[in-house]
Length: 339
Image: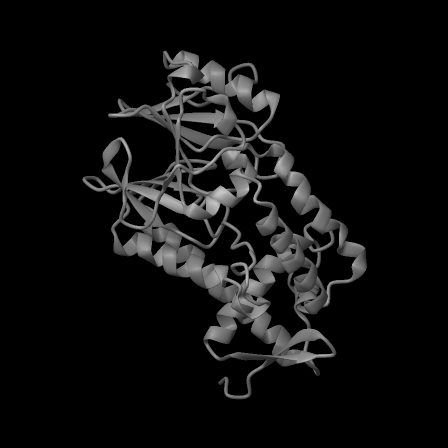
């Protein structure tokens, strides 16, 4: 079967006897999201789409085509915590297990201490990055996206090297970068990867900013671009041969795509470095963002700033830029030791 739309209705795709791809609509710019049904010792669904009536109808319709109902699903496995991947977690009454990275739990349970910490981090991050107050409405949008997320509790925490519960031929691979909860799942005998949003054919995944752990200052925040690059390289090192993605087309032999992603990121970092070299003064991350994304930053301040900070983290790791605090804001300048 194909996943082509027929009369606007999404069709599922049988990948093979034990794996089926189910495609669900989302209200987000990324478009449709894929979830995967895994048959084995346990009947599992990998990811849970977005919490909308349209997604639920599409899911139940496609499950029926496969001969199943939501009541048949015994386990939910999650690649990462973003709303388009955890939306329908409450709709499977027999799924007593939710298997995911431990960091997913804070989102499913709506951990108020963590969510307050999350918002405080971004308020501080906006100020220190020099973002004007006119863009602070983006902070409200961050919280509003949770309306599309489901609730629950991670009952089986997963970490690198674990075996997927009920699916002993699948191993857990940590692929942080796009999210601090991101995991992928590798079938060892043929190196097939269920990759969430880690490797997508049509777009490069955004390395998205997140706060440090509670109790840590902003200086200890994760560096998602460096994580993303490391974990793209990991996929080459472990010999991934095919990727079942969270969005878009299946990726066959992803090595060339990965090398292309890494090279394009390096080109963008070079451009950021040129911006700093040509500047007569140190620049805030926001000022750099406006030059790097002149057409996009006004509508996508959160994503463009995450990308900008990612490039700066990468350049700083190579000692090509230096940063310092100036009047309460972080500023960057090109390093004089660069060639």
